[in-house]
Image 1 (cartoon, one colour):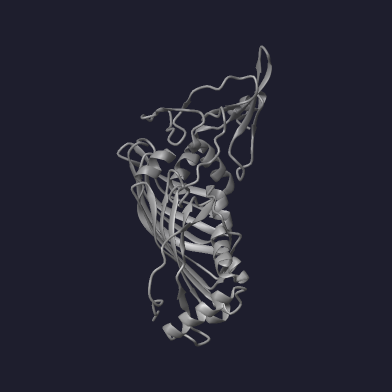
Image 2 (spheres, rainbow, N blue to C red):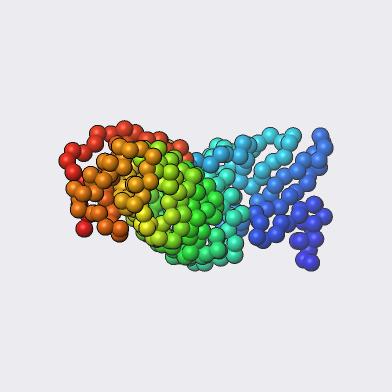
Length: 361
């Protein structure tokens, strides 16, 4: 054991495992008694900060609950007054500049600590670019799959411009949402793959959300979506109990970020009895949702409705559209869109289109 490690051990500095949050518990004796401190050394802090580069890129729009009184280098125990902290999203090594003050309740540190603790085998590549410390690549295991990235994230100049190309390969949606603290009103049983090409300014979550630009495409399937107010609204409107759960064969999400919002150009799901497409936007700061849902049903599903007006009306639509075969789908005009937030969507009434339903090719 080295002299430095001996000295740390004599002070009660206890290292945690590498797979857990890379922190140390330091017991310090004060005049008033023992005071525990949670010590986060500089290299793991750098690790946490750069993880913000894909935590928000992945669509992390729901603010995390802050850790009251937390700070970057010391999360102090009882009996210690909380100290001012440096920028938790971009605390460079001592030689680096551009560190700014931030309130201890800033969400950035909270979210990054949680993210770091949920990743496995995190590996980063750093390069010296004209004297600046720049992360050019990183990878990690998550949810039975793999996250990899090519990036240009300047640690020395955190308030500058950054970019990353992030790839997800067969990552379970539930693990991805848990790791990134994204709160959705739905239960997903599937894995996703895709790529994000994005750029942003700064390394604080709020600044990143405001300046984020770019886009990406994800695919998934087969899988299941359940426990969501959106499907519940469809089931209540149609009287078709089976619509509370969506067993799909394929899914594709095409979205881009601009002006502080994620614009969902198309979120298509295809199953044996139902097809859906969501279009709209999500505000990255407030989590406000504005979505329109396109729905197509197989005639066999409509016949299971408990409402006679739905069965008869859908039969009329089917004949008008000329889609009466077993493998046909007919568009169903919905009297509502969806507002609220991603965690708590709500149906919003809208005017119905006039005329017969559109015939799908």
